[in-house]
Image (tube, rainbow, N blue to C red):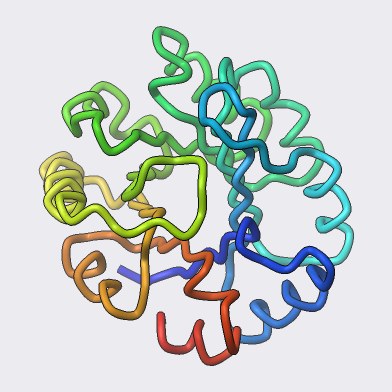
Length: 214
């Protein structure tokens, strides 16, 4: 499958954010990843709708919005209206409303992504395979950038891709957390095709970093 790099602006320099976004686009990135953290579902607080709205005016990248918030269904329409292309939420946060949230995202005109934390088993995704447009496996504990990749994630990636193939699905499989030039070949080989990278993109030469990851 075609591999897509989705730079996470959580690791960007917000003083020159617009310039850095232009650079990632010129370097070949097609997605831009937004980590929306509420300080409740995850311990950190990041940014929300105003940041997405301001960037949308000046970027043609696909906006990959990752909601790490409680009751994500509350904000689906707002993020869709502001220009999100993919809205990903956590199964752990939606609980019994997971299918309803997927349907709400589709109704709002966006692709729906479903994410799980490192401790959640892949089997929890099975009822939603073929319903979600993308599966996001967190390969670190969500909420903070700069963490190291959890090695056991590789088998989770492999197992998820195997479940998708067994159902004849070519659903995008995204990974997020601790991805570097040193381990990206491992996650690609395991079956991931959308790669979120923050520090690995924005620390140092952005263009060269993206080329190395691709």
